[in-house]
Length: 426
Image (tube, rainbow, N blue to C red; front, side):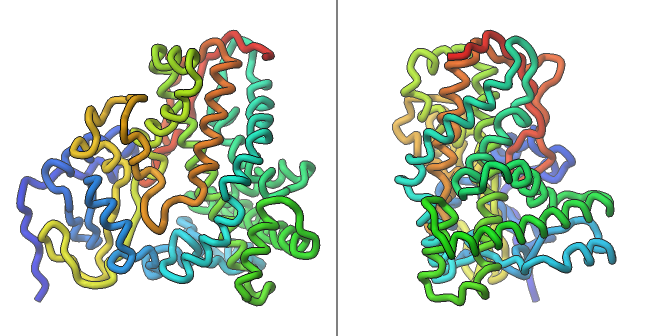
C-alpha cells in the first residue's frame, strides 16, 4: 500500500504558480520553497519541485537516474491544446512525423543529436555570424522613431533571433518573410485557439516542414557554408538513410526555432527592461561596453529565460532523505536555483563584479547544457551594444507597463513598451 509522505515543515503555498499570471509570484514562491521544502512533492502529479542550486545541478548531471526521455508525459508529438477536429486532423494529414530530439532524449541518441547540432553551432561559426547579427540589429534599430514609442518585442527582440537563424541556415533573403511567419506558427501550435486559427497555424506548420525538407535536399545535393549544410553533413555521416532520417533533421530544426528563438527573445527583453529601470547601470555600460557580457550573465541568472523543466526518475531513489518512486517527475527550477542565497551572495542583486558570474544554470548543466548558449549570448550582447550606442535614452512607458506571457516554465514578456529618444545614425 502506498503511503503519503508526511511534510517535515510547513507546506509552502505554491498555488500562485498555477494562477493565470504566475510570473509576478515566482520569486516569492521560490524563496518559500527553498526555505521550507527544498524538495516538495505535488502528490496529484507525483512531481517533485526542486528549488536549490545544489539539488538542481545534481539532478541534471545524473541522467542515469533522472531522464529527459518521458514520451508518456510529453514530447511524443505536436502539442495542441485545442481539441482535435476533422478539420485540424485534415490539416495535419500532410505533416512529417515529429521526432523527439535533444530535449527529450538521453544516452547515445542524445549524444548523436548533440553532435549534429554542435557541428553547426560551434564557436567558430557563431563568431563568423557576428557581422551579420550586428547588421540585423542595426537595421532593426534604424526603424525606431527618432523620438517616440518602441515596442521592444515586436521591434527588436522577437525578429532578431528568427532573422539570425534564417541567416545561419542559409534561407534565401526573398523567403525570410515567409520563414518568420512560419516560425511563429511553430510557436503558436502550443496555444489554445479557435478552430479557424488552429487550421491556419497547422497549415503554416506543415508548409514550413515541406519548405525545410526541400532546403535540406538542396543542401545535400549542393552544400554551402551555412548551418543547415553542417547539420545535414554531420547527420548523414552517422550512416542513417537520408530520406528516412528527414523527420529527425526536421525535429532538430524545429527545436532550434522553438527553443532558440523564445529564449533569446526573453533574454534580450529581461536585460533591456533591467537597463530601462536602472539608469546608473545603463550609464556604467555606456562608459564601459566591455562590461556588457557580465550584464548578460546577470540577466541570465536573475531572469532565466527557461525557469524550469522536467526530468523523470527511472529508478527508485531519494531526495534529501525522501523516497522517490521510479516514474516520479522532478521539476528542476532553474530560476530558483539561480537566486539561491546558499550559492550567491546578495542573490537578488544585479552585480557586474560577481566572481562566479557564469556559474548559473540558465542554460542548464551537464549533458543537456544548451548547445545554442553562445549564439544567445552573442545576440544579447550585440543588441545591447547597438542600443547603448544608437539610443540616447530609453525608458519604460509609464502608461503601459511590460506585460508577461501567462507561462510558468519560461520568463517571457508579451509586450515591453518603451519611450526612446535621441536615436543617432552612427
